[in-house]
Image (cartoon, rainbow over all chains, first blue to last red):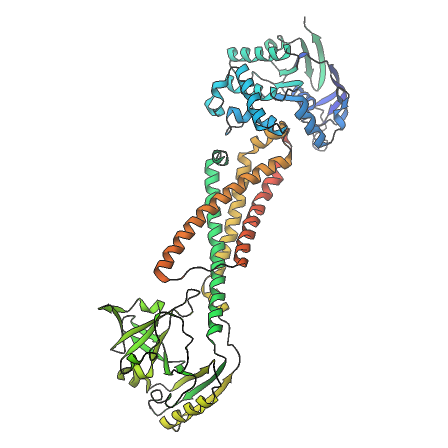
Length: 225
Length: 364
């Protein structure tokens, strides 16, 4: 379970005391499929980064299950990310000079998984996502959809509890975007919590819960049946 | 593994080139130091235990050299100082030394042959021994080398040189019993000589007295100052280092270090995204730094292997042509290893600082 309790984020008080997040409180249960919607600069990516442990809070608390993430040291935060969070980014965030296999391998190397085991896990993941044939290709040689599948595979390999996707279809065409969204739905159905940041209502409508955010505050939080 | 190191092709190649130049400058500096100290060692080894040096001033145009060594039975006597000879093949005047008497082993290191006067066959013949640098000018006829000195032909009976340094390479050694008339006559006009009497086996006092008498017999008005030499003379190290452009190599090394830092900064800029992604997915900063250090180390090892291969080939060619090769000692090896790691540490400083920046900002 993810719980935010009056979380505030100000990036640099000395430069600008504008709040990226302003006393945001919310709870996300295990296995939910959530979208966070809002216009540019609304704080949705900031919210995602805080949930993912990539950013710290200025005020308030963030709990992941019983762990108070907001008070973790940098080292522990890093371990928290490694164990619980998988990321999917808008522009895929793949390493351009690494093959698909090597990109997916990164979280496993960080988790000190042995080489043989890594090979097995990655092969299974590539096959399940239908991208086995591109395992030795670099991102420059892949289509957008293939790149995003590789990114999703990378997010899944460590069996993270939570998948955070920041505009996962933003760089894709309609058809490919729908395919990727379908994959995320399947991942959610397998029991993982999936949180998507999007500004596209058609994407948000595919999720079970839509949280709208504006000027750093939650404007609405509705569950869809 | 190799393809992983060369992911960033251009930067990796530039880095290797930069490291090669660093290695060249480091090896050059070491070579210069080794050469300078080897030369100094040779110089010191050549100095006999017992020496008396005579400075002879004469104005009467007499032949001071021919009879100077008469009756000497102990030690060796050699005239040097301002003595020169005109070598047609070289096209200029060259410093030379003239042996006046040989009674024990001479200090010259021979590659082949002997010093004029050491063989009974030399008597009555015009002959000379040349250092390795000079022998290249000699012309060959029927398997024998000749050099034209003061318009007379001299047979090259010995080549002087050492595998350790070039200390002996520029010698022209004659013997007063094996000299032509033209050269002897030219020495009559020389007003100032330095004559050294030396021995590793016995005192040179008796020899000095004999030589002194011989000189006075040739010119009773000559002024002779004798000094019993105890010191080892002035070191040649400084002069060798200055001559060999040590400063240039040091500057090249410094320039290349700066270049390596710039390349590594550029490398980090190229890898910024990679570093950020790795951190997001759980790599610790130490892990990222160690991956970068590993890639740098592997590149440097590859460079080192390339360089050593080239160095070995060049050394082999030099050895075939000159008989000389670089000598290495533990200090040299440790110095190279030390420089290697110093370069690596300096190169890593900026990347390490960059790597500790906030990952999420970079991802955005």
